[in-house]
Image 1 (tube, helix red, strand yellow):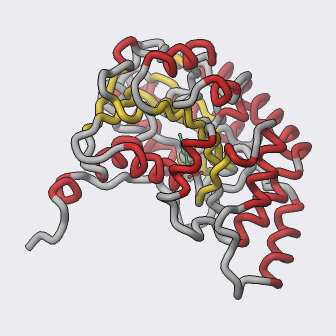
Image 2: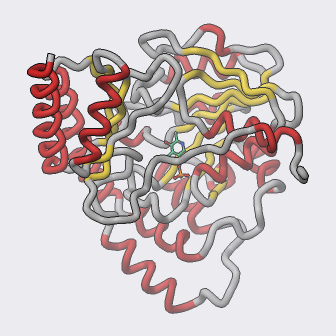
Length: 354
Ligand SMILES: *Cc1c(COP(=O)(O)O)cnc(C)c1O
């Protein structure tokens, strides 16, 4: 018996990265921030927890909207707050694409875009990145309702510069969603494109740069007509009181953010350099992870397994054409030192074995 819509029956579920339930792992597989969130977050959570959980939260997340607008230099009316940017991606899919519509994105990228297209019974159109992960020519697709661009991109860590993204926004039909989950770690961002283009939606999250992946809070920035339409689609109480209170406190502590970003960027440079010295090809990263190529897919698999047996988790993505690649999140200097030690043992052993 099948009670499901055809497209749901046919699709495979999105599989998030491993979240081991036992402690003791060095976790470099899902791009979490290795540093703790601002101490103000804990204080705000305590206060929010002790007061008003009996009452529904503000459906418009008014204070958070204001704060985001202040931090990003835009207007509160241009901000939509969500239960993580994953929820906002879902609202976008439901708002702009239905059965048979085209949803376009480069390959490889964040796998959720495809899942969301399948849930909508839309047509996912994957356009391969060229080898250097610059913007693919074929990304402008006639009749596209949504074009997703993860920038900086995951898993590559590479970035398309704002001038090019701006051109893309002008060329495409439908909306352009710029997923900036990692942009705080980058040298630039596409925020100004929201002012210039009525079809641009930009996504930000507190999961990565603010060390709050456990919280679930994300923001969509776009011109008013897009935000107003999406408000009709979202759940009334999509963001809970605790997340709002904690998010506000995190956004309020920009000093804490800056300090942690500087540390992650410094460790990223060190990790990149060290991996290159070991002979890996490492893509230039604008995110809080690095993406590297091994000799072949067997080597990549082996490195992943061996590290796992030493309780270090990295990501071996079984992406078509990228079976020889590994993605490593930037941890603390101590975690990265341990990773590099293990890695150099593994590669030495492999050499001896040949
Ligand atoms: C982590 C991530 C997200 C999810 O962000 P949440 O706010 O945790 O839902 C969205 N897009 C990309 C590309 C990500 O890497």
